[in-house]
Length: 269
Ligand SMILES: [Zn+2]
Ligand SMILES: [Zn+2]
Image (cartoon, rainbow, N blue to C red; front, side):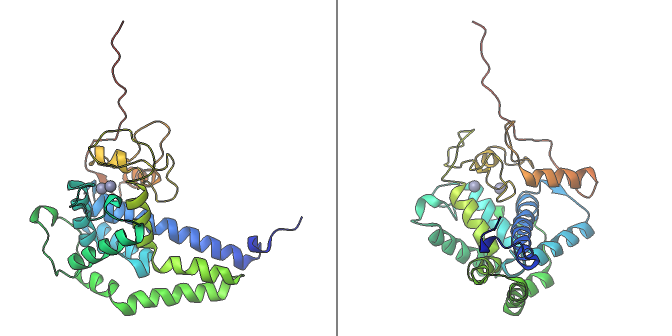
């Protein structure tokens, strides 16, 4: 049986796919666990040294599109406070497309990352800060350096031109791509378990794309729950990793709250 050329079984082709899938998943896993569940929500605690290790790993894995945890946390806390209103920093309902929404998000994020704008005090503080790393990670030489490394990998191992044309560019901007998927789809497409007074949705019952971030409807209802899945058929991969870290006592879960889908109580006839 002959396989199509684009499904190359050459070792080089397989390496490119493995790199793409693992970079995609690890990058969004760290965004979900570190920037989101830890920096923005403090769903778990850990010793300072462990925090530094996770912080550094988040930088390594996210590379050219690394997100400053403080700026991320401020933006995200605003999102929870103003979900789908005109003060929400990234609701899809005020933008004609995901690119326009992310462009506005990026400008606001940069204002916080570079401290050009002061947020409301209630959205700031209690975030992991590492000034040296933030400066280094956010510099153009660092971001371009990661981009060059991704490009060299593709030049060495790609087996087809279109891998370089259509897969490589994603590596440069994975953070914004994940943000666009979660913020756009998670408030536009899918089903609702809860009426939160906003337009949040659960897009995928098994969120293999963004490690649990697409359970926006559950998450806006149960804002402190480190598990974003609420019903028996929902699987949040990020939570599965987090519970392993907690079982190994690397982190300590801070709240007993767990998302749950409470069936309406039926009265006996
Ligand atoms: Zn959140
Ligand atoms: Zn949301």
